[in-house]
Length: 192
Image (cartoon, rainbow, N blue to C red; front, side):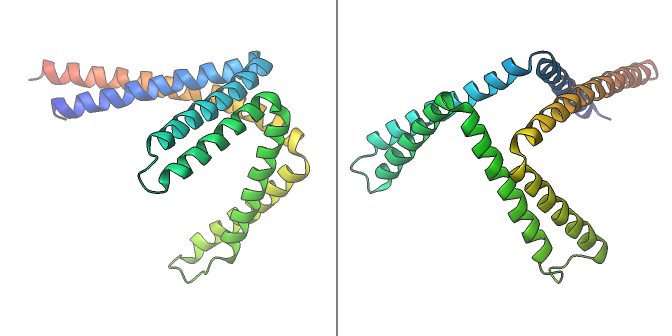
């Protein structure tokens, strides 16, 4: 490995370590303060929609007189602002609506996977995975549509546990690989 490769690999390990720390902290926050974490996510989504909508609206205003695109900017900006306000005012209704839409998306994507033409160049083993994925997507989508709250609560805890475990694994592998890299570089310099 040359010096540039070593530096690039070290940066990659630093990013992996940072990602692991973020996952671990997010998972622990979700486990320790579930209500706060959900409220933080809801507020973040609402603010993102309102600020993004305001910026789109302003861009639309500045584009008046330059074709018809300004109208779409104003409309989309207003819609995003209204959606952001609705998330603040009706967070539970917004969450349930999003969950239902996600369930409908899973059912639709599962159907697409099932009806996709097997002659699209897929090999038979890939087609089997595709059919399995389609069936699981449909079943999970139906489960979400009919049981949105309990499915969301279960997924919340699965995500929190996953984030903690993934964070620990990423931290451990990053630190151990950084240690091995340091040893390899030291060995290389000692024998140079």
